[in-house]
Image 1 (cartoon, rainbow over the protein chains, first blue to last red):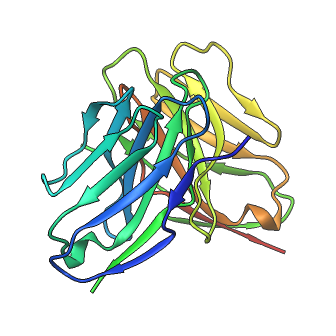
Image 2 (image 1 turned 180 degrees about the vertical axis):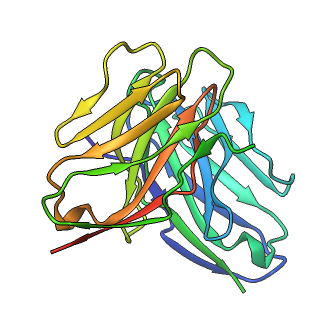
Length: 112
Length: 112
């Protein structure tokens, strides 16, 4: 059974640009959530999608957005990148039953 | 107030000893789930163990067990017979609705 796949693994962008990260969940999982991990703030919840609907959103500016497609794959977009957006972005999928979330390997974004 | 508190930023433990990683949580929701994840230096979050708020017994998964004390809002992870490969960051997390709230983590180093 394939795990959660995140692409790309590494990304370098310039301030002011925008970026799109992709997450393919485990087959059959309909819930996808996104997290930002930085040394200073730790792991922070960005948003969660279920059946193409955003169910919850963390405390992040509107520059951070996401969506989920009918095949449960999800993308997150960050516009007008800032240096502080440099982080490891983790995606997790869930079948919405006991056992919780399975994480992908993450996308490491560096903004220069 | 922090929802998840991990009071041990770092721990050094001798190989083969048992380890207890502390976690306290704060919620007024009667239905919640508690998770422990391991994050090696590669960055991937590895699910270790889950405890539901209505579970009567402490969860166990191989060498991992969760010491769940609901009245104290405590969910400590116990690793029996530690191994060198257990060296990593360990995160306690809680799910109240959608998404996970993480603690700051404990950096565990197993010494030979």
